[in-house]
Length: 509
Image (spheres, rainbow, N blue to C red):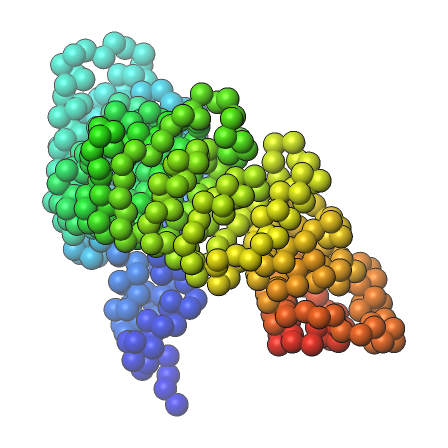
């Protein structure tokens, strides 16, 4: 029998991928990896790839010290820096870093003094970076409320350039870059744009949630994944920048904004995305499409001349779109369309879609009036005709609350996820409303033993009532418990639902 220190490297790799998050995203994810370095040399060799592949710099507004490796005394007590770059450097693993993430979730403390902290956090992780002295001087001058002279400001800009150069030289193989920043002042923006420019030629993935950041991808010829927050007025910066290598594009707008203009610089030109396979457009629920005549001042915006001959997946989330814009997108050879928002917009999308899709996904939210009668009318209209999709997925978020299904008639929905709590008595009439359903996930109401006993009594009564099975196609039923672990007695009682559902293969709890 093999001992833990004699396992093959591929087995260790598989184990680590099961017990940890192999895609390191946060300091917490990274910290969980460290304990695996100390098991034995063979585990250390495999775990090192996970530990050292992602460099993290985080500034969070918490009165909490996250790592003794990265604390220093002369920084605001409400801002806690974290970075694993120093440890990576001490281990000589700089060339293993292929992904760099910079987090700055602070929403206050936005004086120029706090803007310099991210540079200090980086420079403390670099060897012999001369810019640190200038940055400290700049920081101290602001703290003492003294005037920043033009010469000191120039020196600060030069120091930031030194930090950028040192960072790129120390970690030369970064291919994935992510910025997640709530607020950014000019000194920080200089850092972010400089790091992007330095890595642009080798980048394969770039994610930026930074307000009003000027970006240039003219040299990013290998970029395949691009995810941008464009809510801060980037329209003047982005036309014609998209590399032909792009395969996945996500645009996020936190406010109503005519960002279709980002796709082209001249309405008479045709912009082609020859290799784009996935497009996601995200807005906010506040500005989601309700009616084409909605008067937010953007209802005349169109997509222009755009061709996406390889586009397979389209996701529209809380975005205002005109009929012409939707028609433009649906000309591509799509296999999957995903819509998230009020049902009125879904009707428009479904009417325009003539593709034979593998899947059509709807994630419904209540409209602005939260009118359930209107919701029933819209969705019944949407699902009353045969869909051109092999599978129709539908999800209701938890803002709907528990409701009756007697007014719903969704004939062609095949998969449903109900994220709102539902009682088991409500499950049975549900199958009549959804005759083609094969998969159902619901949130269960039990929060304590008393409520569970009531549900068990009803579930046990199914056997004595001898009610004939319903004509349901459901094969899989998933029951979700948020803050409660059901007892063995309940787990056994819930199997009685199979008496109603002749084709049910599994009940997962």
